[in-house]
Image 1 (cartoon, rainbow, N blue to C red):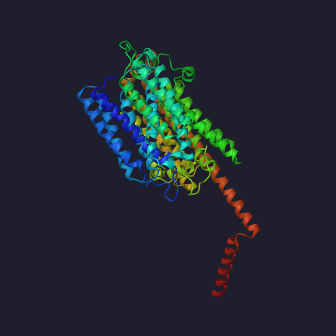
Image 2 (image 1 turned 30 degrees about the vertical axis):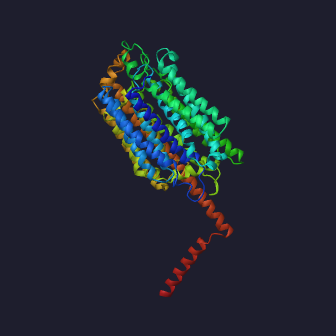
Image 3 (image 1 turned 135 degrees about the vertical axis):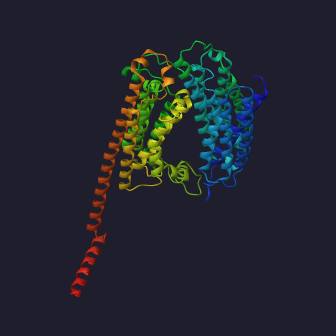
Length: 581
């Protein structure tokens, strides 16, 4: 890769992102934070570095936006660089907010800044761009955090850097990140059309994966300053490979591709029969990886709790595993394959994520499991997973998202905003936007059902009467939305769906398929809410029985004098009435 102006600015963006994410990760997670202010990022030397590198990245993104606009690389990529600059600027501003959870927001913003240009160029090669797009973005974030954290290790004090806590966290981060990078880069190399490792793109992805493996190996060999310096240099070389791979496009003749392959990245020529919806699978890299990681983390916490002598109800484990299995099935089976091409299947998938999988996941009690499986640490010890989760639970952002009105608006309003506007058509053309809305439907459903029947206690717990009102309030919105779709004569995304060019599209009829989608929205939206209502009433009755049993036990033991006080009050009232006569 020649060192052109564009590549030099590209490389500066990748290095600045690496330093920024590494500085935030070091300050919040790697450094052993003790004392009264262990959940406050006060006086941390990594934060000024994060602020400086963020601003450098913002300037580089602005330069790239101008370069891509003047060189005719596309308005979409120029806009993506503007989004990256905005996210990086917000990340820099968060360095002035000293609470620990600001690191979560900053890392999320920096990840957006990093993947926005990748998302804008995901269709540089059309075939399998859904697979390569996901894997490229995930690998970019994982390696950037890995390389940056090792580069910022020198901002730890000698005692912190050599402590067992910091060494363990560095090793854990290195192994997990290296594993993610290797898997995702392998998917990119195998899924990318062309000659694989013989293409320039494949060689650069292989180089980055090799760099990740080397860093992971070095961290297990030694944690000395020399080894850390070598790991930082390897990380820098890996980012050079990442910047090179970003611009290297395999030479593939795509002039005669079918419309569906060009748009979706794969073929939907086979009829969407019930059998094909089940067995004609298409791997969704992001959601499959997310499901596997969530199940593995949950089972590890259950095992850790059992090792400590505790117990965990198996129905909760079953609910968590079942919920994520449903997520993986919906997104990776034929349902996920045909969702962008068949309106009714698309509606079924979103309702399955939003109304079914999310509801089951709330019964897993993941946050409760984390708090039980991780012991509380005194202020003389370094803050760990339990303290991080507790701090996040008390954050203003999470409190805002769990407000009943906000949860109801996100749960019901998203269907209207997404399907009844141009967002639906736009997402069909853009894989990453499709993925974003799948994730949004899952999260909004999880928050909504978490308020009603979830095992975990939300930031704003509701009384049972309030939960009942929330369910009743959501019911008419889903029914009305389904009626709108069934009665609508205008076909949503008609141009896109009709240009797929397969005979089954005309045979099914777009108008009829939209009517089926409306029917699914009506019935599929109401039925889970009825189930949630039954579960809520069951929990309500069970709690009343527990309270009645506890009250009776206290009365029998003589520890509850409320009944005696009530009888005394009645006696006094009777005595007053007699005196009045």
